[in-house]
Length: 61
Image (cartoon, rainbow, N blue to C red; front, side, top):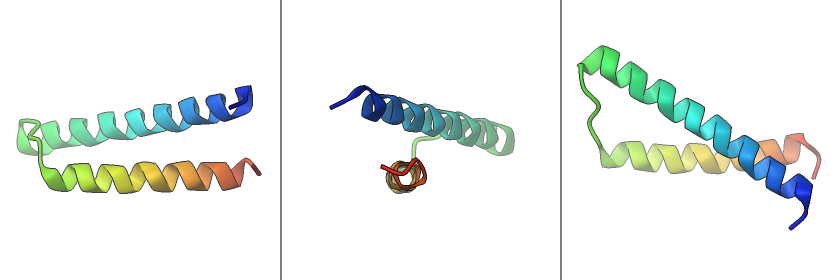
């Protein structure tokens, strides 16, 4: 694994954490609490996979 690949992983991880934070913030504003739901895990994994593969193709690797 080279330096560029590691940087890409961290960028995607950062974007995923940002999306997760926004998601939880909206959940707190709308529902008044943050509740763990299995559907959130499924959507989050799908979103992270999509982010990774789209970011990888966007950077041209």
